[in-house]
Length: 283
Ligand SMILES: [Zn+2]
Image (cartoon, rainbow, N blue to C red):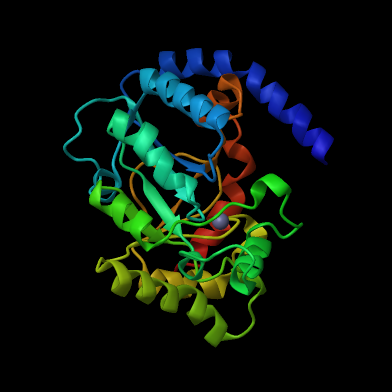
């Protein structure tokens, strides 16, 4: 399966220029699309440099929008350029440094999805081990043992105009939770904790993992009643902010051609059918 996926993505890469040319020809007057990118822990000097290069390269073809503009349907934005919204999952310490070193420089406002019980947790504690194992179910690699942001780091992000979203209490796979009490702890308690600690309103929620297997009907129903915007890991175009949104998982090491191939929608067909199943859970 992995080999087939590898082959398929390479074919999609090659088709990038063809599709780009075709779309430009067919859709010159159409509405712009919005793609939402998912990044995680970008911490080494090399990764930060690669990330900066990606942002520079993407800014030629796309306009970065703020979480507020996304919420408001970017009514005040006149250009027909395709739009990008940056999101960061899991709340690692590196997020603050990246905001400082790159995002602020480009005046990009991003959406940070925080695991509420992970905030300020020290290494070598039970909580750290529990949550890091939830984030990396196959066991974290050595270079994945990163610290989370503390309360001051998150306050700093908010003060710079970034937006905080909820990413559960402890990054459990919600589809595996059988008790409604546990599900409420992961979703509602987590939201309440973020709201009271930072004195803000939380409107955004991102599913841990974000795959089809990690999402079920009861979690979607509970989220529907408690959040304005829910984010998956399904690749696709968002025409406007919706209750359930597509997102593209990317990383700084990804080649430009692979990145742009995803963003032009070459792999979207792999996700469309299952996304519609999730959407049907909303009502
Ligand atoms: Zn996550």
